[in-house]
Length: 222
Ligand code: CA
Image 1 (cartoon, rainbow, N blue to C red):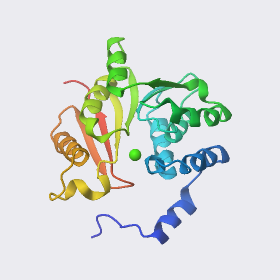
Image 2 (cartoon, protein in one colour):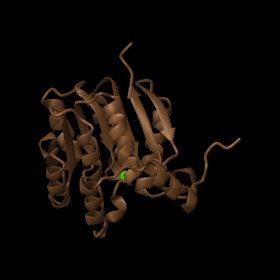
Image 3 (spheres, rainbow, N blue to C red):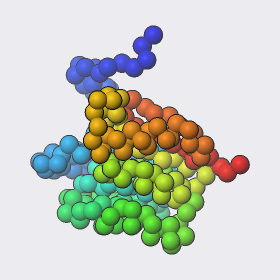
Image 4 (cartoon, rainbow, N blue to C red):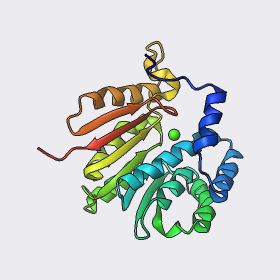
């Protein structure tokens, strides 16, 4: 029984050929991002497409994104929202979000995207202090890995019961499974992954796609 197919280049290309729907605007933003030294942080286009589909599936109107980078995933999620919907996206760097903004404008979704620059924990705490707990439909965490547990707790509190939290890079190139590897990022991801298994507040699925994607659905309180 095959539990998971290891994608070689040929299969990966096939997946893209038959399923990727990336228009000129998204492709040009991706190309602009690929010119950056930090381009490895770009959300893969097929993953951004999944995020958009999940946002639609949730009939979300309010999305929180922790880690904007150049806003490629932000664009996919904003496009999946109704016109009055909103993505509140957090990043430490305004410079990267500025790369995405012209593309958000071309796509006609810039007014759905609220960029919050600063440490994401502070932004999430400010949202909670403003009474946003229980109001968010969908959250995506893709930021500095050392702080993932802090982001997870705050995003879970922001989510409504029945909301969905998506956590990216949970396999961290497989390093989390290799116990001879210990560094702050890997240890943080490993701790979060282990904690979620027994977390009664969520329904859980860890998908071994891309760099590992955890889906956590917020249960209603008993
Ligand atoms: Ca990522």
